Structures are given as C-alpha cells and as structure tokens.
Image (spheres, rainbow, N blue to C red):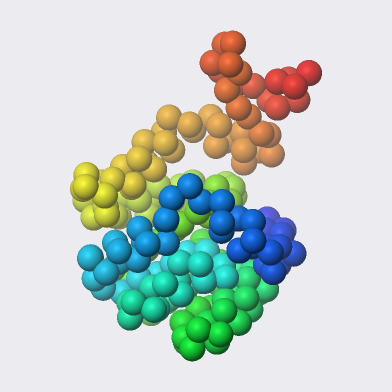
Length: 188
C-alpha cells in the first residue's frame, strides 16, 4: 500500500532521532498513564504503532504481557537496540495495524500518540468505527465508553474533514467564519 510505504519510510528516516524530538515533547507522562492503565486492568496488551518502544518497553519492565507492532523497520530496530541495552526481550513485529494477523486476542489495545491520524485510506475510517463499536462499554477512562465514545463522536462530527483528508486536501477551521476551507484558500 503506497501510503503505508510512505509512512514507513518517514519513520525509518527519523528513527534514530525520535526520542530526541517527538518522544520528549509530550506535555504529560503518557507512558506511565498507559503502563498504569494496563497494570490496573490486567490482561494481554497490543500496542499499535509501538515504534522504538517508548511505551512497550515500560510495559515489559512492569511484567505486563504486551506485544507491539509497527510498520517501520528502523523504528523496530531502535526498539530492539534499546531493549537489549536494558536487558529486556519485548515481543514486537512488523505489521500494519489495518491488517492484524494474530491467532490470539488481546484484552487491551493501545494506540498512543498519533497513529490514528495516519489512517487515511478510504476503508480505514469504516474499520476504525467498527473497531470502536466492538469496544463500546470497555473503555479505560472513568466513563465506560471514554476514548471509544470520543472517537466515534469525532468520526461523525468531523466526517467532512476526514473525507477531505482522504481526498488529499488539508482543511482547517477558518477563524472568521468557522467552516472548513482548503489550506490554499486559508493562506491566500
């Protein structure tokens, strides 16, 4: 898939610098949030887009049964390098989150950072909506549908924006009128 290849190539190019830039720019300790959540809820964990192990390695450190997947070969190499330096042996493999191929199921599925924003193929939004429907009532937030409810709501509210994104148009809200406009119109 062309977009998967471009995304994978992008992360391959930045893999060695990821911790210096992206991972250090989080405004809160999301790694502890995910690890605490997984410890509290228990069960087998799948991390979609595990990258260089920013979250996955903390889960493994806490003896949480976790598996990570990512499409970037070099990010996964960085994960193995970091794991070896820490004496850890995480379970991770190269796989597209849109084409999961596991025989066993998972109790918790993590999708940290921005992976969902890369789901831009025509069927991706339908797939995300279906997955979120399967998780309804099993959310990790205080509200039973927490993140899945928010995601399903956003898919409806921002349907036009997602459709434009899939057609290759970047849209944003024009401050004066509050309606989506093409980026080229907004900066002209």
